[in-house]
Length: 402
Image (cartoon, rainbow, N blue to C red; front, side):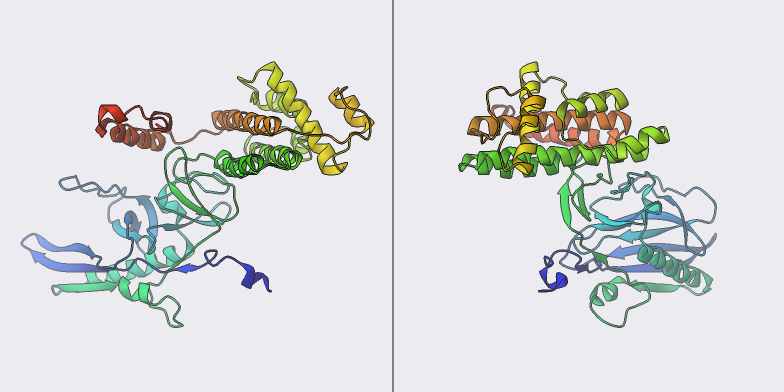
């Protein structure tokens, strides 16, 4: 079987434009020539749009503010600019492309952060190459409509763009999007993202998704624990997942936080198999305390499980002199097979999730998020709670989510 054949069908699938029609109407008023723009959409698919300010020959310069009925018109930052509507694909998502790292993703909302490198910008700065070409084509059509002295309508048929998916011949305004590998909902602002790989930033509020991804892994491990294990494998996989998560955060911190070359080289080559070393490194270098709120007893237990992970992974589960010396586990003898219980396996899962949340909080104290996007989502959740009958307002989970 080829790699292409083995690829899940949802990955890297071309997704059609949402379609619709844009009508530019030119007419004459007593004070001179004027125009109006109308958008219509009648297809049975998701559709949304936002607007950007553009100057000829199709250069985006700002993201427009679109209000509701009666809202003041946003004239744009410079005289002579005009608005171009950027439309979603037929799943209601926008293709996005970072000009710093050149990587592609999709988002349900116009992005202000790169999902990969975390760089910030306005939505018009994350247009894909295909969207930028569409803006240029639109600008040319708009200029042509303005050049005519007679009244009339000039239609841009985006339904033809949507229908052209899979066809060899494409209309001049054609662009489509592509599904990626991991669709996730941001736990902080509820934005829907579709990225390559597992880990990244929410492109709306800038929050990392690593803890949410770890939680998925931990749920699966807890199911294995409840089914009887093997508990040793569950402990090994739990610690390995946390090791990987720490590596992701440290990699981002090294990339984004100014530091000396020596410290950067040391952190880039570091391994995170020893909990005491990890705790000291994060606290000493970044002032991130991953064991905040963790009891001394749990911290000691976590350190032991980190040592045991090495034994399960490299020694076939048998203790050796090095393990006994480093861990201080005097209850076992060399060559003795280590054993875990359902209780110890569940305990390390809970501890790992607490430390992961501490790490994420400390990371975002250094790399800030967009608080307004998060506040909007929390306000929405509060409205949902307030609209419920009082008997349901304190149902477990609702208040916690908000």
